[in-house]
Image (cartoon, rainbow, N blue to C red):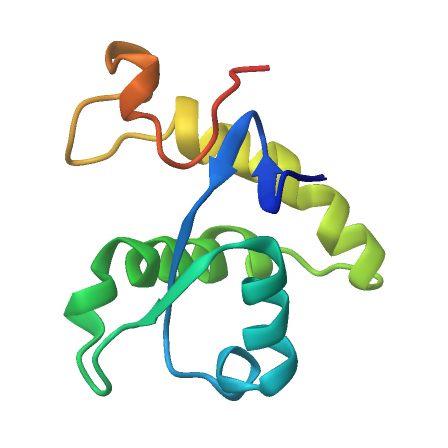
Length: 115
């Protein structure tokens, strides 16, 4: 939802965005969209995945535990399975840090609602 020049997502206002250096994020259209929404955009350092470690680890886990672990009939079926996998990942899967249920809501940076 767009409101007052800022993007609102999951009850949070998006003010800044950190992305890798992929072509989609370097495009003129993406830059114009960020500017129109009033979102500051920065890039991670090239060839330094550790500068974006949390996202890199999440993507690695998503590919290993959700995207390629089952045989899906089509992309729609795979997309439908994502919500339940994200719920499991955020609330029930063991992590090396504190479980989400023990963290205060202000520390939850992946999802804001335990549904």
